[in-house]
Length: 182
Image (cartoon, rainbow, N blue to C red; front, side, top):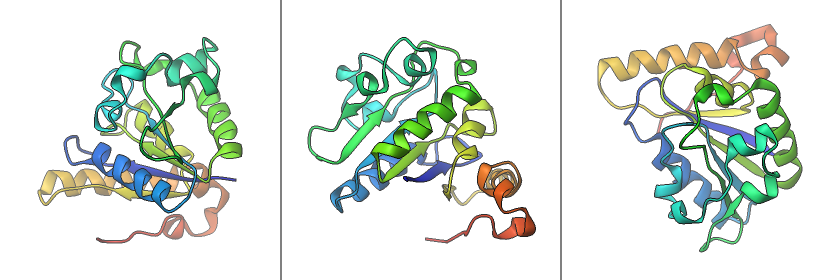
């Protein structure tokens, strides 16, 4: 069973995608079979950072809608043997991600990978909420400005109350996730 880690923030432009790519690459270098999923439907950038933008045939939404099998949409990294990317759709609307579809993809990926890294879009819209919902752990990326810190505080509240993990462990929501400063 894979460990699912969401990289999230309430604010855009703070380094979530760069952190997702770096974290996933580090896990793959340590021998863990790792997939990183871009949840930013319509505004994907993970494929650019990971250098596979010209190799995408199918995407996350294609898998959810049944237009492609998961194996067709996964892009294997050319440099790291244990690293794969599941790109977001660049042309579809973020509402194309469904609760049921994301759950099915996560279940299938959990059978194949040691780690699933979810690159969340900024804020608390649907893609971000779906990325956070399945997470076992969270990395919140922020920068030292009051709006970024305040938005991250809102994200912590969502992680503590609106995720699968927080619902499994309702006795003490403040401990649903462990938070670490870097």
